[in-house]
Length: 281
Image 1: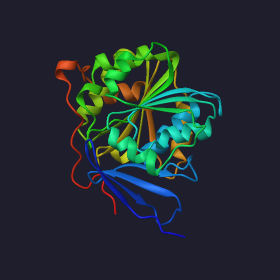
Image 2: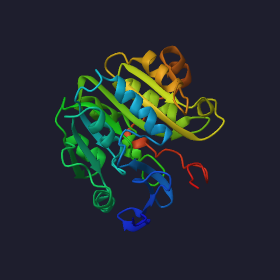
Image 3: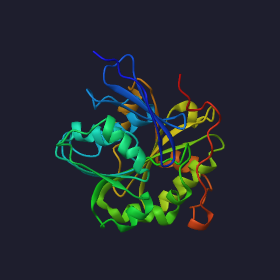
Image 4: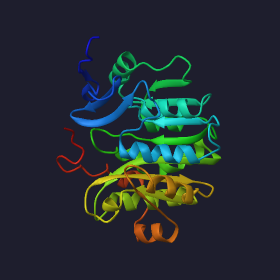
């Protein structure tokens, strides 16, 4: 059997590389300009390697009855890890993936093809522009995992953007975002304040060391119109191979503090990660 070899390609926004995992026969790591973006096991689409992806998966598992199909909008494609996860855990789901980098999408679907019956539609577009044109009340879940390099773009951090997300979601819908920050958490606090203006319920999932300000890291923001099952989320995240904490209610309001919602004219990208924060090898 021929050993899989790395694939490197110049894409629209950098240099993408697919690297095979020597420990899993058909598993691949996607990097862009050296920064890890996605991990996919074609034989086990429910395997989520990255810590933040596992936490997003926990939320996806609790937003509705297990196995029930959902309409999911993904802003940011990567290697389509979470769309594959939803297709495997909730067959019959209808999913749209919006990725600005056509070259990256072409690379992924060529070398890591989707199952024909996955129910996943791919779109090349700017995430906010596509969101603004999407029908109201068309999604059960909206997942934002958009990074320009290693930073969340500024136009996906404002109150106007949060209100568009609210418009596209159904009354019982849930918004999820992969964010990254470190103490003093100016960016993360501003995002909590921004989404608190658009949604009645918020939760934040992160490793305790990140929340204590000991290191730079990912945090998953959960926003909804209706109460989030934080007890179920807490059980799942606490028992995970990479334990995390769920903050909500008064504790999350204390964490947010006096942070103000972000207007379009004041929006800035998420902070640049310190060198090696998301390195590999």
